[in-house]
Image 1 (cartoon, helix red, strand yellow):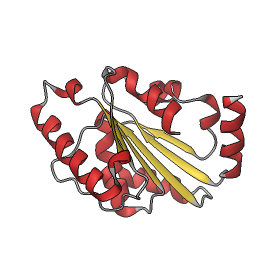
Image 2 (spheres, rainbow, N blue to C red):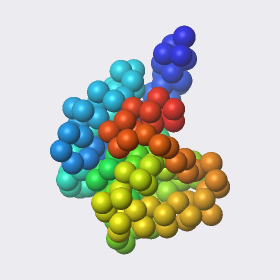
Image 3 (tube, rainbow, N blue to C red):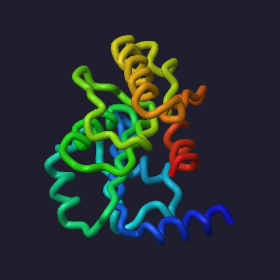
Image 4 (cartoon, rainbow, N blue to C red):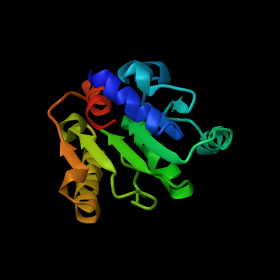
Length: 167
């Protein structure tokens, strides 16, 4: 039943483009696709690696017909979410346990943006952990407390939970 409801909702917004950025190592586009419900992936879904040039994504988006844009990034792919939001109007942004770039801003982020993360996954990267902390407070201030959800999941388990919960 849950799958049917999700399918109906996707059909109602069939002109939505979804861009997903994976992370380093195992978090390839293929792996990211395996974390997503099957009915979420369609002709308007673009799944890229963390090191994809944003201009390439923009070119692909320009070939699609859509009226809403959702952008999601996991781990190192989070950096591309910040880049794309600055140059394309987004209707939803999801940051999944993201790497937060040094010069990040919330420019282009819509009110329904979500940060879903476990800062304990970043203990070996104190700079990223600190930027996640700053991002958390800024998102809560700008979008409300519901825009940030901390989890105790390990890094690799977070994408599947994000897609099932928020998308």
